Length: 353
Image 1 (cartoon, rainbow, N blue to C red):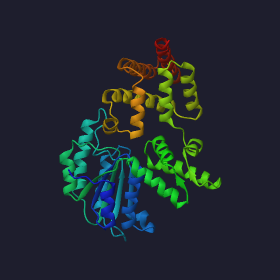
Image 2: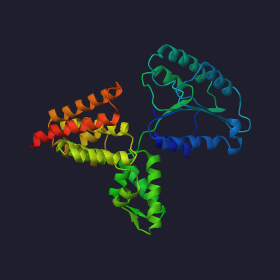
Image 3: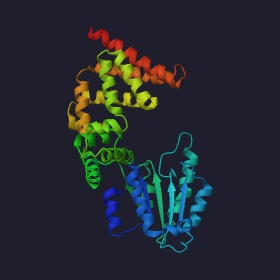
Image 4: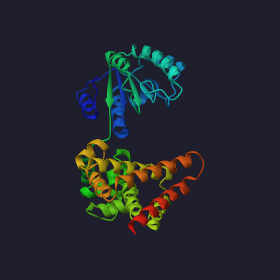
């Protein structure tokens, strides 16, 4: 199964090479939006988009009626544009069925197979999905044989994102340090939409303050909190038995409006990553297998070296139990997480002392 990525599809676009269908999925919505806009701009003028651009946001809830409408649109030529564009967001046809929806999902997939057979050179269908079920090899093969392509767009590598930020800064006659760029990228979990929003704030501040560049202190002052960095500090506090500091760090995040479910998720994920780092020991192996940046991998090695496997597994068990208490309604979310931090800190404090 041949897949395109962002660079290969941009190369096709630059060469004016177009396809009858685009099945696009992945985590990097910023780049996906660029691809979709390029296709629409090529075939449908702005004044004709009410007529020749059909957009359907389905939220993984496509119906037989919607499929019938799509078939009708594919068989109806564009009014004045070179091609009619049919944009389907989250149709869910190429994703796994939801719980208890297996039979109805299969039925809709078979109905949609008829849509795929109608792909033609006078139209262009764009399917935007969050994920793709790679087990649907026959259906994906039929899509490609009908003139459609599959495009996977995941987050860019650190070096690419760093150059992107440096180029943005240069447009404003500013510099940005590698440390500042890396910190911002990590704060935003490599999401280019978030990175751009936060970096624009930093550049506006630097311009207003008549600064020559952007360093880590400006990122700390202007941009969203470093949640991963705080989770590192939170784990350090717990492992050192510093209960008051652990609760202070949690309060700081909550004051900054960070959602508690996200804090809980990040903390639990961090403990799992520490267990992996303890097993792998090598920074490059951690980068490859855990999917973090090199500077994060080095931090994981440093921190995991302070705790034993048994202690990390104990922390992971506390995370599971805390989450279970919330989901079962036995304890409020905040009280449950505070109890986790207190229990873990006191346990480590007894070992430290």
